[in-house]
Image (cartoon, rainbow, N blue to C red; front, side, top):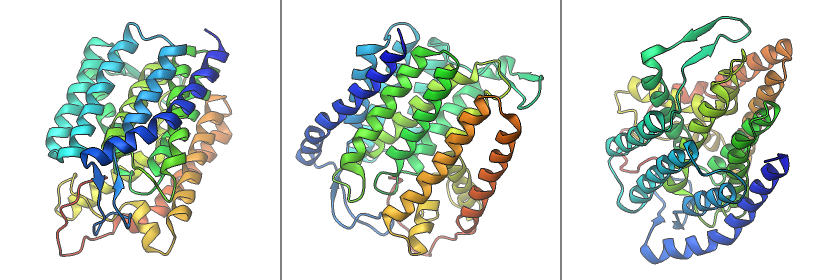
Length: 349
């Protein structure tokens, strides 16, 4: 297994998703899996969903061809399949948010208990000290996995936003995995990045197909699980910061959304138009402009993560402070957002 396998896994996943997506689009139209416009959604016409089926299938094609699908990777496949089916049923039948959450926790338990994926300790950034979690390792890991799974789903509100953000995060984590010599992890991340970037041909504005929960949920799940197994188990002082920075945009926006909804007396799963991408649209940006701004934030966080993993601690610290400032400034209006009096029945896209 060499760096060439990493490149080829990403390339194969890229072309696989290009070939698979048109077929998934036809399937979605045939069964009526279509997102219709409403007061919260951005799309102005019905758009077929289920694009995540092509993304996840292309991902596993790349991994099967150039990676290793035995042992731990097999349990990751089982968990990701459960999450994909959860998203599929939600896109078709509109599952209750609490049922989705229970299924996500179940998938997380599978990879934690049987796959051995867990955060046993973290090193305090820029310090030689570490914190061991002991018996709390399992619930903390499950919380991380379900949190990231929902974070990516929450930002899936503009054409190409979730796919591009996941692709940038995957590429960032892949570079760090290569720096650490973790080729098996790098192959997983390369295949994930390739499938996400290939999907943008059909998903970037104006979108021909949406990934739906069928894509957003397993993408978040895979990023969470792979980051734990490949990076958070590292004994380096920046192990915890790299995935947090790489996934900074969805994690921060989701945290703000939860605080905002609780502050407004709503359920954390109650859909609203207070997300950062909604606020950018409300301030006059079109979809491409808003997505470009959010891509820039994700890229900046990814660059800081790569610099940090290379050991330039002073530069990394400055970059970390800068990106926090940008995110805080960008989300200031989202935190204070108050939902209109009328209720909406739409779920998170």
